[in-house]
Image (cartoon, rainbow, N blue to C red; front, top):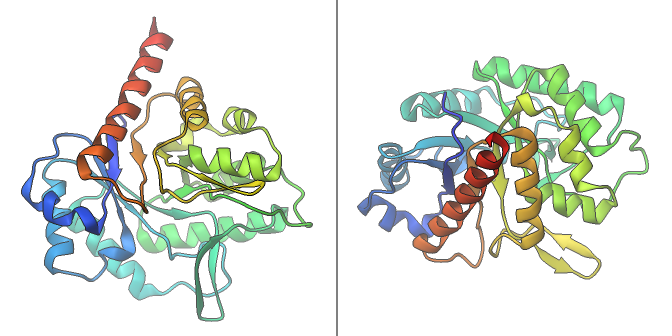
Length: 276
């Protein structure tokens, strides 16, 4: 398993035709799991073409790890097949829920930060890992309002879940920055508190202002404050693969690749300074 601080991008349908035709060079690429499960044709061809150049990460959005509904065994069978076919480096999803009584909310809702929620999430993650036959990489999500029931801090909650479930972490730096602003905690202290040994890779993305709130919209270049927090995370946690997410107002593929190269340059500089 490679853990070099190389750059990477999230694969988007807008770029599929170009991705089929060009060599991206070494690095990483992240694929939204649900866009490729049980599918052939061009989506699978793109994934296999990119895999010739880069390590692939399967990043899910529908596992609903914090939800109450039973997991679908067919989903995990398909996921295992896809993982094996492309030899995915990591498979993951979010510390959130999005389903209830068979209904899909198509969103990533955080849970109240309570000890009960820790036990619920950890049990569900352990079950999902057993069904997948692999450790999951769990992403912290953005939050816009807090629950009155929350008793644990954001980093404490995430750490307890990871440890009890024996799971790994995808540290989304932009989500930390957005949630810290919206909920009023210190983003740098969050980075300090996360167990570095569990972090497998980083996410970076842009956000926008919605009145007093920050919105994690993945619709622009990474902001200066997020870059600063990313450098702090690299200095504290160490070099990890970094994926740049850009989901709306998509730029040309070369612009997206340039943003991910910039992330790599920053990580390499911080790592070199730490080693000096």
